[in-house]
Amino acid sequence: RPHSAKPFVMPTQCPECESLLLREQVGKADSAAWYCKNPECPAKHLEGLIHFVSKKGMNIDGMGDKIIELFHDIGLITDFASIFRIKKEDIAGLEGFGEKSADNLIVALQNARTVPLHRFLFALGIRHVGEQTAKDIAAHFGTFVSLRKALPEELFAVEGVGDVVAESLIAFFSDEKNAHRIDDLLREVTVLEEKKKQSGALTGKTFVITGSLPTLSRDEAKELIEKHGGKVSGSVSGSTDYLLAGEGGGSKRRDAETFGTKIIDEEGLKRLIE
Image (cartoon, rainbow, N blue to C red; front, side, top):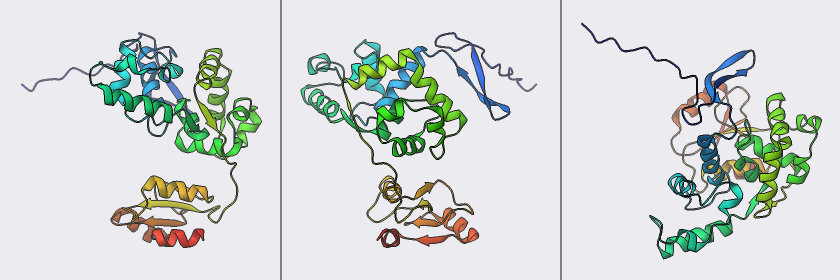
């Protein structure tokens, strides 16, 4: 007889903190995923620290997942601000740290103390605020002070910010614990003012990037397009104006041909900007 596997039973409690797991409402339906709603859940706290130091967040070189876990487990870091209070004598001699690697991490921490507004906002790990949304918000408000005291109607004025994102931002900034953590963090870091979004040569144009470009990485090409007012999407559609194509990227080329999207190379992008 074939072996009959036991049916999977979805757990009802968080395996880390034992809080009740709930699904969130997405539109008129519930999400497929289940979430721990405990803001102090140790597992969520650790993931928040890992997200904070990531490349698209504070970009602290040499501080990967395992290092964060180690520092967290031994009590060296407890929140965002404590990361910047690490001293060489705290880590020299720990597993994986010699004299040179300890020096390198301290230098990386110093370099990360100055951060653009959009990366700082993304690093905070606010629910529903992804990389692009953080850039849009930063470009709209310019400074963290302005964003932090923004009224709901001011948040709704940001392109791409709807009810869900606005409510998440308001809830985050109005929480007393978050306010204390941010104030503590701002004693350690400087958040650079961001240039408010202005019209440019690519304003109103949507791009998709595919393949390997000659001199620009995809992130650099995206940054260049956004700097001049354009938008970058992940897939080709009827609303895509240009496919920026390097070597490879066959499927998106075919999609562009199907939709009649203009295909340009890196030099073509530079000519558009000029």
